[in-house]
Length: 116
Image (cartoon, rainbow, N blue to C red):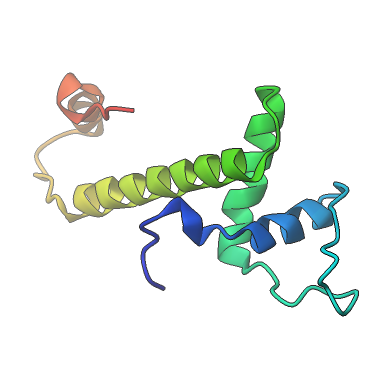
């Protein structure tokens, strides 16, 4: 799958599909010919969109399409950063002479703290 480079990758039709599945009332376009949606939201996008909706509800922010797009894109970017960090940490070879406590101390040190 291609990396997402813009919040516009979370299309409004995807957001409407997820909102409908979550039980929100969604306006039906007057141009729609069928009762079914033409574009279904892929599972990959649906996960970020539903998480974004939950976050916005907790923060008592309006569930506008733009707010949902921005929040979903931020969530996606955060997971991408975490994946890069995990990939890097998994590639580090640790000396067998270090104890588990020593390794834990190194990982807890300020050197490995991530900026949010």
